[in-house]
Amino acid sequence: MPQAITRQNFDQWMLPVYAPADFIPVRAKGSRLWDQQDKEYIDFAGGIAVNALGHCHPQLQQVLIEQSARLWHTGNGYTNEPILGVAKQLTEATFADRVFFCNSGAEANEAALKLARKYAHDQGNPQKRGIVAFKNAFHGRTLFTVTAGGQPAYSADFAPLPPDISHARFNDIESARAAINSHTCAVIVEPVQGEGGVIPASAGFLQALRELCDQHGALLIFDEVQTGVGRTGALYAYMKYGVEPDVMTTAKALGGGFPIGAMLAKEHCARVMTVGTHGTTYGGNPLAGAIAGKVLSLINTPETLAGVSEREQYFRRGLADIMQRLPVFSEVRGEGLLIGCQLTERLQGKAKAISLAAARQGVMVLIAGASVIRFAPALNIPFADIDEGLNRLAQALHAVVQEAG
Ligand SMILES: *Cc1c(COP(=O)(O)O)cnc(C)c1O
Image 1: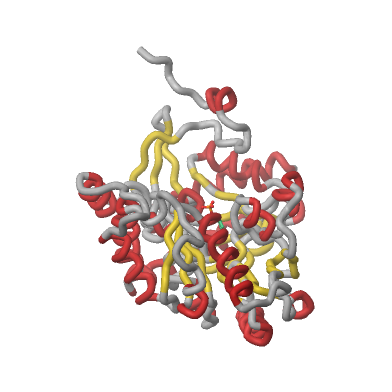
Image 2 (image 1 turned 120 degrees about the horizontal axis):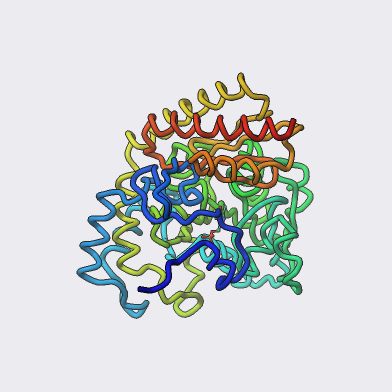
């Protein structure tokens, strides 16, 4: 018999870029998950805003099985029916005229930034190459996207970095106005900063970015990798804000747990990406396409989207209850089922410790920086699972507060 796999094997064999929990999940259903010891967890993390329909959704499983018996991959010398179906769904549902498919959020943003540079090049202005991004933003881990991200800790060690990327202050119109000029080819922004602490943009801020981009001939790119596919209660967050980008990226929930990403663009800028200018081997494969098509058809319904807002209210009421009993959160913020809880003064820096305590009590939560607890549960999480998960979280918080004294 082969030796059993344990958590220690991670430290032995894996590139040490993560510090995963001390248990190994082995199976899951809906919003509940079990580890090797058959301990049960309520999932408030959703695989980092990915498992938008919960784990092992029967209709996604069905599509996966059916497509896996038909066609998995052909390479980009051939197109396929499932992915063209997703392109139709996305262009019909959004501002966009064209879609490029890839496998992750970082790749989608990489494509968006390359498109922006080429769009400016094609206008014959070599000076127009500046990319304006925002402090604390997160756009992925490729060298280009990690440089666009506004957390120098993630990029500095990999210098030299791609030049002409600057960072204005998020939600600060004057700071954006000072950074955006005729040399700017694109502005990239998350409608709600996810990794940066669950900080929603103000409507006025996104509107001002739209106007500044129009004024200076720059493309406005919305990174909706985390906020997209129903997360905020709208199919895409820009729809709630009423501000349209020229380019938008989506990934995470788009595959409901199967890797897929996409960059969406208006015709006027999409057309610069001519044959051979960009590509990927796996992007837009039929297996990913079949699953994403089903994910979109299940999420983009008035019932599912309304359900997100109902669950948000329910979740927030539960958090308010906890706050009445325990002085743990100074603010609860976010949009839809992307919720961030700012820890109070005495719990500063304790987000990781709280997430570990939560796991011990049987609930999985995310953090966003050292002092924010983040929730990104399935959009269809049962109300009973919200209750049970919050009960377990309250026990964990109680324990951490006792320890903090
Ligand atoms: C997760 C995330 C990314 C990166 O996506 P990957 O699939 O991890 O490459 C980019 N932007 C935002 C806003 C994200 O939340």
